[in-house]
Image (tube, rainbow, N blue to C red; front, side, top):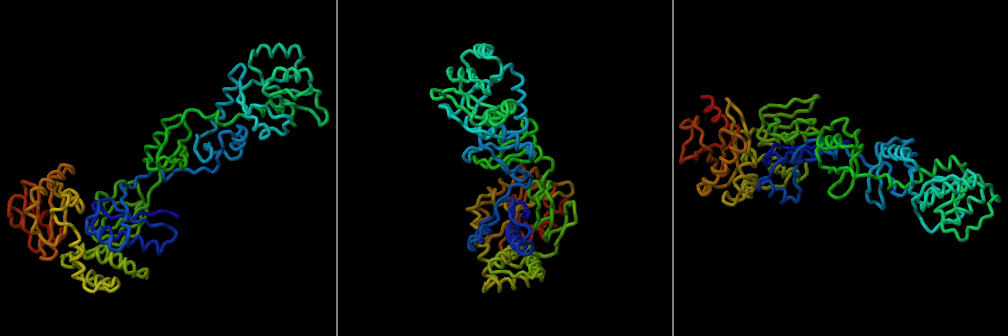
Length: 543
């Protein structure tokens, strides 16, 4: 199963958010092989929040971008080993399965990652020294060697060199004296003098080889404080395997850099490439969840996205250029992005994307429940200003009436007015958030400009906020590198608007609206940014 994100445009309005949620419900019903997740890439306005709250529905969560992240490529451990497991078991695992790295975990707590490089480094270091010293864990002897304990010593672990009792006893004693106070682990066959000497001098351990049952040397081990183990392997094989009883914790070196699940794919790839490690641990906050290796970065993952209520990269969620666009559902003019493969596009000249989504429910014969009907209706009435906008079509009106019945709403007009009334007064709003909540950018005739729009049920408080809003428009103009910033405030009851804008020399005296004061224009009968205001702006710029 794959995940597909459904998103509206930046600074989403109600139509954008509602169509994303409702289309995700439809897609999950007709395509159970994938999971469709509605998201938004901007701040929701108060009206939209109110509708979702009234229905007890969680609105689409905010998603800042769709750039590939570590979460898309993280590997989860197939094998785990404990810090006290012997090197032998790690070598066996690598010879059979060839993993990139193996996590070392103790009681559920991550300790580190080991790779074949760590194994090679261990054996190279062993062969580079004149006489290597090993860390032995007594409990690892029977895990690596076939045999049994004759006596468990007082120490569960110790550090010692390896000594084979194969030479004549006098020579053996000389070699032992050359080691000083560091007593070795003795590997020996049936050599009574050697064994007795090791017992008397309290060697840390004695490994007996080549002894058959009943052929034990007559040596008293009762006062011996070390370990005695009887190996079924020959002396050479016993020596080889003893070197691999080393606990894995002694192979762990410097801790590699950590990466977070939400770290960008490119950043994590660069971090690993610049390090000396084969793999890096991955965390979700403070919890270890897996790892990434070089294999994880061989192919760049691409997030699957469905665009609703828009069709241009500049208006969409950041990182879309690195994603796979699989569908477009929209009612705006086409400035469509390029896609790698043929995709499904539902583009109709209607007043709302929610109308198109309803048509798709009918096409797939999926019933519309009461909550979905209410959200679809909300999106339609919001985008068509209660079916009064010039963008409204016959289909919008027909669908709105059908949704009214499905949602159990007695009066469409009353519902629409309550819908817009749910937004706070202009005086109570954060100017920046309100303007950016539904702010679209354009570039025509070499001029970059942006138009925001909000719907209210009265324009009585516009003068109170005018200066603050124009100042905010100037700040937005700088932030977005615009030549001209405008904000359309629409009265859905009286069907008219007020336009606030920053100064722009090429527009002075050319707009076909009454300029009531600096930066404020009266637009009676204007409800649509797309069909009424935008054409007038384009005319002014062309002239």
